[in-house]
Length: 485
Image 1 (cartoon, one colour):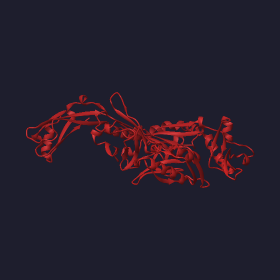
Image 2 (image 1 turned 135 degrees about the vertical axis):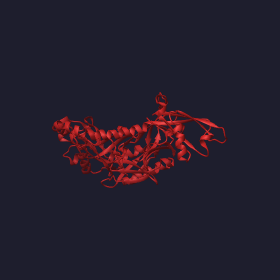
Image 3 (image 1 turned 90 degrees about the horizontal axis):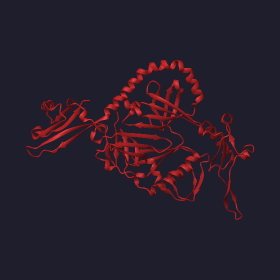
């Protein structure tokens, strides 16, 4: 199984095998439509607490060789037990640090994104810079014309001039060359893992947000330009409409949704659309989307890669095959977001967009399955218990940590020296040494002589602290304590 580690400014901050570098929380939320985030907590005695500098330190989380998060801490909170907790944002947030000067641009979409990134890179340090990546969003005319007379935040400019008018997603990729920023019409990656009822699916929540539903849309296009008396082309206050190509009506509507919930209006502007026919086509497609509302499914899952299976993780920005007959789920859906707790795998959830699922059809499928649902659950109990057992095993293996305290010297230079070593045991950040019996403490010496080391181990078993003298060390030796809980 690939190890999860955390680095702060290039220095190792967490490793599951080093009790000295223990942490109490590492929860990453990947979000295809927003900035990824990390909640990181560490106990008061972590040796590198002071190295974490909000808004300055670069935090990198790796699983195996893959970077699963890179960004910075926004704050530093302390609770009753002096545990430090940082809320962190991913590298995409670096685009909020720079401003775009006034500009005038004509060309394709990729060229405008390149313009924004070039200006951004001029104004920030190297770790915040981006290379232009894959751009798959297209304009029908492969030509846009935008200008601005004011300064604007780079991320706001990208969202306003590109994403709001042409859709798509931003994605940061971490490569040897640096951070690549992709602008994608859709994601092409898909997960090798499947989410299946009775296998790795623990819970299902399906939500349809009716408050976002719209039945009538007034579309507006680019500002109309006219020629003044001097022969100069100037913009007017009027915009392109669909009235001339839509039987004299300025709006489009979804007939089925209109009969269901009535007249609910909105206006949308396409600054780059100059032809009424193109505007009408876009408006019809858009109102069909708005009429459905927003449907999403939140699935609580066991990521099989955390249970020792040699398979890639599920991530946001991937398509995932999901199957749960009792819930009417059967298809390949986009994983919009994923919340992953690297210390508590049973808390993993994914949210998938599922516009093809309707509450009406879902209810019908559930009603037809009521008689068989109980039998299905009984048949699958053993599989779920087996998977849950694996999750509990993972949790318990990461729950405890030890800390060795040395009273005296760490390196003996003269005869007659001695040191006392005490072993403290923690469950997360709470010390439990006093609750354990002395028989749980097994001390070990490693001097290179297995036979004499085994004798030494037997003589020092069942003690919470030991005294080391020069006679125990001989030439060279190291010591550690094994706890049996």
